[in-house]
Length: 66
Image 1 (cartoon, rainbow, N blue to C red):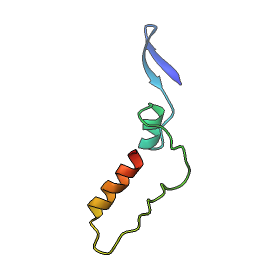
Image 2 (cartoon, rainbow, N blue to C red; image 1 turned 90 degrees about the horizontal axis):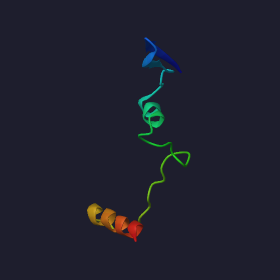
Image 3 (cartoon, one colour; image 1 turned 135 degrees about the horizontal axis):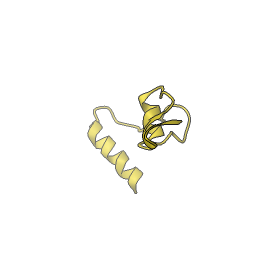
Image 4 (cartoon, rainbow, N blue to C red; image 1 turned 180 degrees about the vertical axis):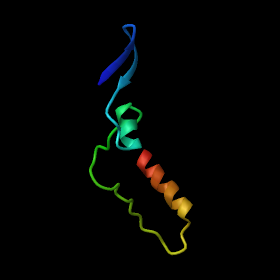
């Protein structure tokens, strides 16, 4: 990283080009890198035919929190 100065006062920096928006967010500390590799595991839940999806998701969330 190099600095550009105006009369000795830093006014800008020359930095490497970021390849993606995610890399930019990681570099600035807005987000962190994933801690596990691969895709996020899908939750598995047994459901009766005709079950309400909203109720199933709500129940799964309650189980995760407590």
